[in-house]
Length: 379
Image 1: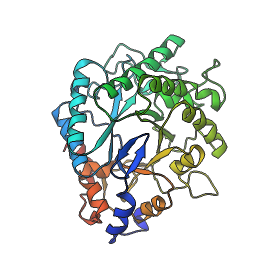
Image 2: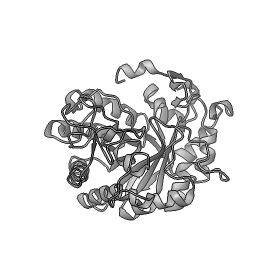
Image 3: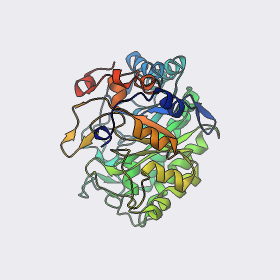
Image 4: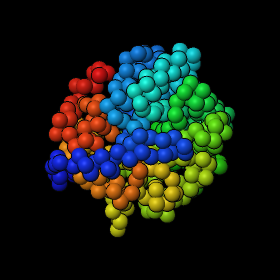
C-alpha cells in the first residue's frame, strides 16, 4: 500500500510540475490534473440540491480542484434511485439547484460535470424516490446472481436510454462543462456489462461485445443530445459493491472488447475506478486499470483509488473510518510517465477542501486527516 512505502516529503516543485499542468478533454481545459471523485452525500432533500451543496462543491474548486465530478444524480426513470436525499438531474427544481451549483463552481475557478446514475437492481423494493417502482435490471437478478426485481423490456431500455440523453442535454443547457455516465460498481449500466447479472438471450446479452450494447446505445444517445464539443466521460470498474474481486475483463484483449465500442460511440474520457490506484490490473505489467484503458483506446483517462491516504477506502473489514494523509511520490511517478492523465481524489477532499492546493504546493503534511464523522455534514 502506498502509505507503507512513502513518506510525505518536500515534493512541492515536482508536484507543481506534474499535477499543475493543464489538461484538455474534448476542448474543455482543466487548470490541473486533479479531479474530485463522485461521492454520494445525500444532502438533497426530495432530490433538490440547495445552497449548502453549491458551497460544498465551490469550496473544493476554490481549494484548487481542476474538475469536479458530482455525486451520482438520478436520471428520470422510476426505478433509477433508492434514496429521497440523492439529487435528481431532472425536473425544474432540481435543475435550478444544479444551475446554481455550476455557477458557484465556475465563480471559484473550477470546472464541473454531473455524474448521471441509475442504480438498477441494487435497489430494494419500496425504496425512494418512487417506492412503488420495482428494482430493474437486465435479467431480474441482483448482484449475487439471485432473482431480484424486474427484467427490463425493450420499452424499459428505450426509456432509460432516453432519460440519460435528456439529463445530458439538461446539463449542457444549464451550464455544466460535460457529463459523466456511471457505468461502474454494479449499478445498471455495469449490470449489463457483467455476465453475473446479464443473462439475456437477446441482442443485449451474450458475449462481452454484445453485453456492451446497452452502454454503447446510452453513449450514442447522449452524444447525439449534446454538442460535439461537450465532453462525455464514462466511469467503469472491474470490482462491484458486493465483490471486490469481480472482473469484467480477465485480460487486455477482453478489456479492449469492452472499451472499443464505447470509444467509437463517442466517449471522450474514461474514469477507471479502482480501490487502490497503485496496483497493476493484469499480471505481467505494472499498468493500473486507467493505464490499460489509455493504452488500448488512446482516450483521456482519470484514475482513482485511495489517493493520498494510508488506508484504502473499502476493504475486507468494510469502509475505513479514519485515514491519515500520506505523500504522493508514487502517484507522481505514474503521472510523470503519462500512465494516466488525471487523478481523482475522494475522501481526502471530504477531509480537506484545500487538499488539491496543498498537494500541488508540497504541503500535504498540513492536510486534515479523514474521519467518517465528517460524512454527517457538508463542510
